[in-house]
Image 1 (spheres, rainbow, N blue to C red):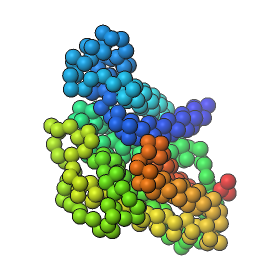
Image 2 (image 1 turned 30 degrees about the horizontal axis):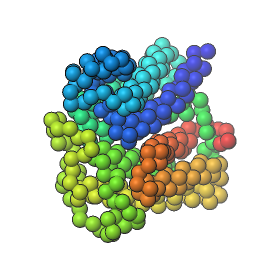
Image 3 (image 1 turned 90 degrees about the vertical axis):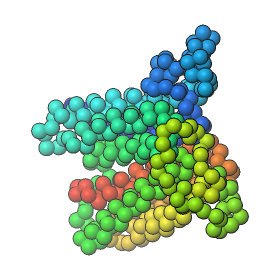
Image 4 (image 1 turned 30 degrees about the vertical axis):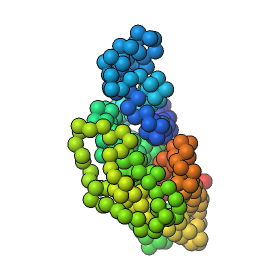
Length: 342
């Protein structure tokens, strides 16, 4: 019974983690990251100031950040979901500790996730108190995706999902595929980091044309300023502080690396789909390829249509899904289970 509870909670936590990641992107891209200038409450409330008296008091306490209810609600809803996720992760860790002597029970990752969630909460606080420092914002994004990926890994292992007969794959092909799958996962993580850095520095619209950038294939760049990772804690980073050339550099590197990821994952997918010895993995290859194509299309649409909110949020969400497909592939290749992929 407890085994089933752990699995159900891990599935729920994985779904909720994906929701939190998408909500975080929505908050950031709708410029509501400072909708509540304090933490964990909002202008000293557990919800958003509503009455005229509450609003006046909040505006007096934070004269440089008057209440904008629509932004504040976006931020608080994100916090409510994140808090609920934290409680689910804590529940998973408690069950794991109680059942730690059972061979089938995962222990290290569920307990580690509690520490990760605590650190993630601190990053959320610093995102607000240090006023959207790009390094903190990107780290908060990566922490959310790490939480999501680990919860998905726990769920896959606990439920024995997507398992195949590894004995049907020649050992040489399996070893090669494990290396390629891990390489694909690392490339996606690096690309997500570049995407997070692009968003955190408000550089998404600094190449407004496609496939060129500001009408050039190689526009002026400034790598030193573009990738200076820490700029102190005193200034407000909302809207970005970098000059045009630095933001163009960030955007351009995100594009270039996107091409690398595209070719690598497309080649990996085709290798899986068309190699007869890997026929049991064909569905996984097709899924990765479809998600990849969707993500590329959303990225191009962001540029062509000048970053519409829905497309930009979807681009973040599908990036998370692409990451999960690579986690899934690595799980499949390391599962060692002996039944067919369905």
